[in-house]
Each structure stands twice: as structure tokens, then as C-alpha cells.
Length: 112
Image (cartoon, rainbow, N blue to C red; front, side):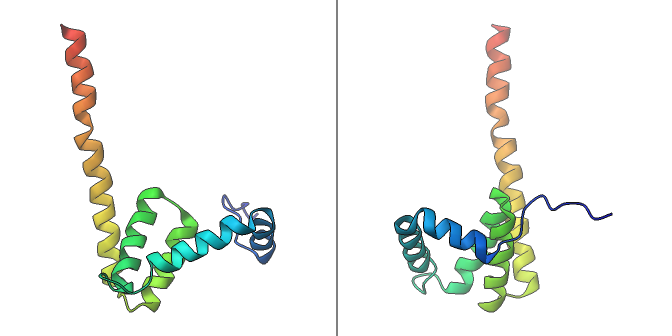
């Protein structure tokens, strides 16, 4: 028996509904996205690798899929994509470790 998907697939119907509900915001977001991912001081490929890493930290499945595809189309290799994901994993783990300071501080305050 097939399990229902946790995240529904993107469909034209969902895209149309979002556009109809907030067309001005969507147009602004599309313009913003186009400007952000345009060739600039960073090449498009680098920007897409950053997006792949960030998508893994934010854990957005739609972003992971879309930006991985965009990274490949921009010329990223499988190895580059996986390294970007490992950088994201290290940053997420590093943040958890760094924030242990807050827990230790709370513990130490209780000792006084």
C-alpha cells in the first residue's frame, strides 16, 4: 500500500491558486529572486550551491529539489553539490554546539 506524501507535489493548480491569492506579492518575489540569482559578483553556479546548502539547513524539500536542479543546470558537479550539503551540515551542527553556551550558562546560574 502506498504511503501518502508528507509534502504534496507542486502542481499548476497550486501555482495558479497562489498567484490568484497574492499576485502583487508573487510578482515582487519573482523579481527579487531573479535579481538575487542573476550573475553578479558571485557566479550563478556559486549562488545555486549556496542555495542548495541553505535549503538543507532550512529543510525545505521544494527548495532542495529546485535549487539542486538549478545548480546542476548552472554547471555544478555532484561532488560540488554534496560538499555544499556537508558545509551546511557542519554549520548546523556547529551552531548547536556553539549554542551549548546558553545551556551551560543556565546551569551555572542555577548553581549560584
